[in-house]
Image (tube, rainbow, N blue to C red):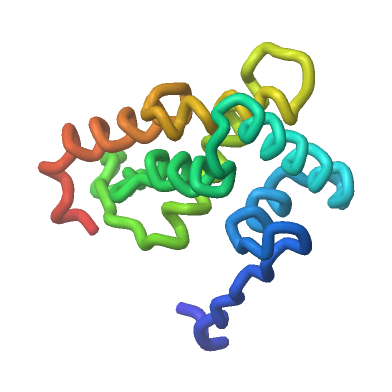
Length: 155
């Protein structure tokens, strides 16, 4: 058991254009090899594309997409007596949001299309409509947790 204490929760800073923490969290997850300016360009391009396609507030669509993909429970592998069980665990809102962002970006990277901004905007619009790969991933996780509900006492 660790003796160092609990790590303090760091609050994400808002992004410079929209003053939104969720946008900055997405930029942090998009950026690879420290290229934040490229990540900002991708995300702002996706937001502009969402605004052009749906004629709605893109930040509302973004919040709706993340909330539709955010899971309530997850399964964790636990080893008990030589066999491994998938134990369902409830997760907090911050961890659920982080999972949702990861799933959205993974699904948009796997999409076929021209640029990452276009793929991300399509995936976010689909998630806001409750369709798409990321929403399916959430439903699959919930189904797996429901199927393994008998092992919940192994927490």
